[in-house]
Length: 232
Image (cartoon, rainbow, N blue to C red):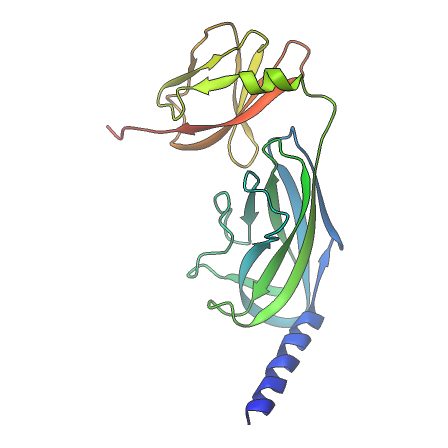
């Protein structure tokens, strides 16, 4: 009886795999290291007239993954916070016949390298019934449009975390500042001058990305800013 159950389980998994496909295939993310975040769209197609309640988990290769990198997954319900690698147990995705669009974001944090991930879909909240597996290659590549490395290392944001404003140290080459949310959308920009204080009291509490740019529109540095509120 045990062997029969095993064979039935294997048949179910193989049958599910045959029902799914994805594009692009192969999935390859090319992320310039000086970008804030690289958005990658994956279209998942199911070719049978049924509905699956799907849970997912993003696996990262333990040998090649750099702890400074970040990811973010947007499923059919919501976009999860950085490095949340599986959906909430109580918020499954309903996949119907046809094509659904998912997004995997890669945050290079100026670190080059290559790695692999897998987005795995499951048919249960315990993630025991695997439905489909999507291998994802990631190439975090160097580009030539950034300023000298010593400038990038010298510029810092303070205070960080910040409540109402922030400033820059070693800011002589910084001409403009742009602030992005974690999804990579620009929400604020400032012209910068030496010892300027930039007001952020109107921003919601959370993590933001700050891009510092010189007068020739070269990116000097991209870094994170933690905005907090006293709650008063």
